[in-house]
Image 1 (cartoon, rainbow, N blue to C red):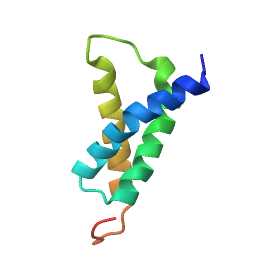
Image 2: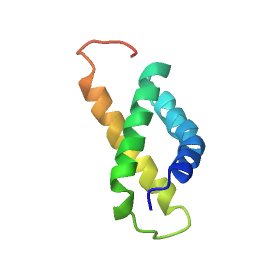
Image 3: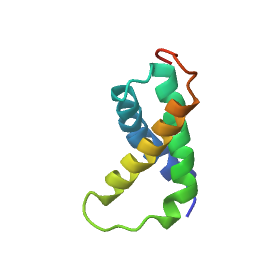
Image 4: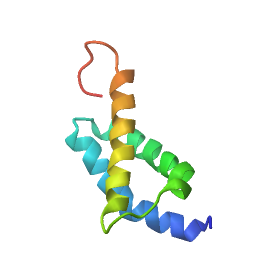
Length: 84
């Protein structure tokens, strides 16, 4: 079900985690926030396909989505660019 309150709680819990992963990957704060938003959009569109396979499987899946969005963001950077 697409419950607005549940989604806001989800975003409040997981956005800082996703943002932290992006910062540790070397993104500037604003770029990390942008990628975190892309991750949340991808999760909203793909969560119906997620299947629980173990106690930490959701976090592994979320980390994988984040890695893919980070790779996309790094590919979009101009050649020779520093930071974000």
